[in-house]
Image 1 (spheres, rainbow, N blue to C red):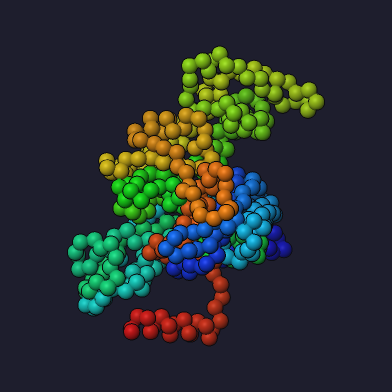
Image 2 (cartoon, rainbow, N blue to C red):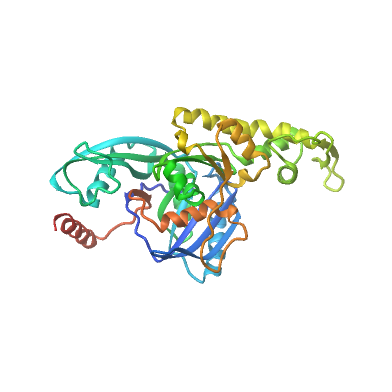
Length: 427
């Protein structure tokens, strides 16, 4: 950190991810951090070696407000996972909501001269797409191929090896504000870790919670976090769109604290034990004693009904759903893929599934991460859905480019890399 206490900002680079044997992922949320360590076993998925999650300090809406607190949280959660795994992490994949990730599309056409398409041709097109829509103050997290065609023909599942003259790539670029992202990456790297890749949390949640059939037919994933709710739309087996709103479960807690004039801790306890987004018969007769704010030795108390809690909770949850519904507009999943999956801590609130079905008018279920092989595991992977999705992403190739923290390359190594690239493209 500089003497002024400001983390120096660095621009990232877009490149394919280098898959490693030991994978470390860090889900950085507004209220919770989760670290998973796994071993990549090609052909049989990822084996879970270590897992840890703790309360996140120093973050608001996924962005840093207290650097020292964030670094302490990262060190604590990573150390616990390392102890369990018996491994020391050097590189991590980081899941973020910082900067409000959003999507843009563009089409890139390249003349390839009547030869077979290589993987590098697609990556060059994605890099051009990323450069084309780059703006000041914005970084690109992902550049993914949505549709690839040759000479105006049918969309290709894999263009590599196909012969043609003109390659057309429709690229999906996920962007986020650069300053919050750079600050978060710098804080993680101050904990003696290199950020190997950065993934939008909603994208990772979808990879963990959706089945292959849901990804193919189409589905919408809502990741209800503490300070941010992210949405990821999938279809055709690919990520189609990402968006987010700076509202989440923490705002429900704040509404309860303000509406009942109680402390945040008490409001969180009420929300967890008695809160609901839908009123039930008899709620107006169920009374709860709530301690107020005052003398710590004898705080004043009040009696509220469970119906009163729902009156405060439902409008906020409904607001989040309606904002996302309006922003998606006519880009909702097709009729065959009209399904909604809820993930994140906010999805555990009673009545959230029913309210989502009402607002989005589509079947809704609670998303859970699929069990991972290995001796280390959470009793309930619901608390680690996004982190499990980060592990799944780290162990696969999504065919795109990803943001990673830059590292200086020695001149000699850089020359060798260029020579190797030339050989791959020409022989």
